Image (tube, rainbow over all chains, first blue to last red; front, top):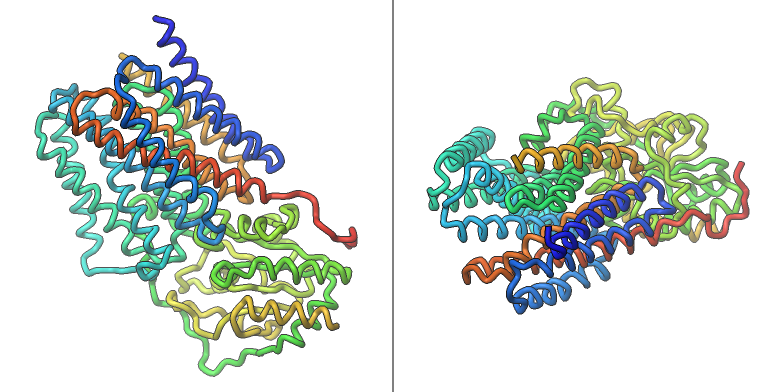
Length: 460
Length: 100
């Protein structure tokens, strides 16, 4: 092996090891930052290794691409606010998929269709996963950015249409493996892949986004891996496999946390809401509470748990939440945060927001860690969360969320729910927690109410 | 024969990834997503060859776009992961240690 190739392979091997170590560092928050910086160095090594390849004979387009990419990537990394993280991640899956797909198309174009069956299989997987991830991620981005309505868009016969689409695309793929020189079919397959991405994400509502974003993460990884197979490059295969495994695992975790079967997730046939929930007796009473009274109760509480939901992210009220918690702690109370796995629009969404607001992470508790503690809690403050605290998931077999693991807020001594109104939202699932005797409702915008609470607690 | 070796690499890497990532706490799931996303920017390696190999004008242009997209992910992905991880702090800021 010539010395140049040895050098290239060495950089790839080093990069692969550094990527795995980087991901491993994420198991411990205190080491995570260093580990990921090492992974970034691994990436630089792999790029340098590639640049000395003898296939590369001209550099002007490479330099141009690196420059434009850095110009766009820098602000996307440095200035995007934490509240916009879900759509930021969604759009980055799109960029990854664009790269993988275009490399596949370039390979195919240059080969003129003269390919072995094995190569064609790899290329086919590459452009199929790539193209459906491009449009799927873009749709997810549009929904999360609210350029498109976040509610599910369902057309009649959608499932039949999707199934046919899958079958036809897969059929073309198999035909192409046997006859790799059918150029038109190759491009038709990409077009169908793009269409699948759209039709897969259209029927998905905002609350199901954590599953979709994770799944697209996995597909983007598989596209990279397939690129590695197509061009015979191990570091691509390894990095893609890591990405694919991570996305796969997160989708499994998310779908478990939403009580959806994994098959349901894999085939994208989720998001449609069954409206057979038992309606609560009309005129059932709830107890509204004023900010003054709520503040009084929080000020004198010994144990407080805060349950944040998407409503906190929308109102961008994480900083006020932290302020309130610190006030209660100063008065001698104990404040913890209970984080449901699917609170928000992506895995870990709430943790990042609260960390941004300087909440130390040892105060953030997962569902399993904290569910036993609600019974001894004086006041639970629910901020813009709904389904994840709905006892119907435990007691109402007719409810669409029946069986979903929830935070046992209803077992606390008292509950204060912050909400805009009694409107149950687009899912239309009534929440009996809001009507329970121990629950008080504090209506209004989360940020405004929290600011009022802070002022009132200061005055107590 | 080589493709079999590649399959080995894929399966083993996926296995290692799965083992490592199951141990990532939910606390860091968002940084995990942005981290794997940055790492999957490794498709830059394939893009660079397409952009610089001077095979056909079409592949050069496609390569250029691919290099741009992958670079966005590498630069933006590692930066935002670092920004997030910087925020996760252990020490409570100014509590008086009054934990019951």
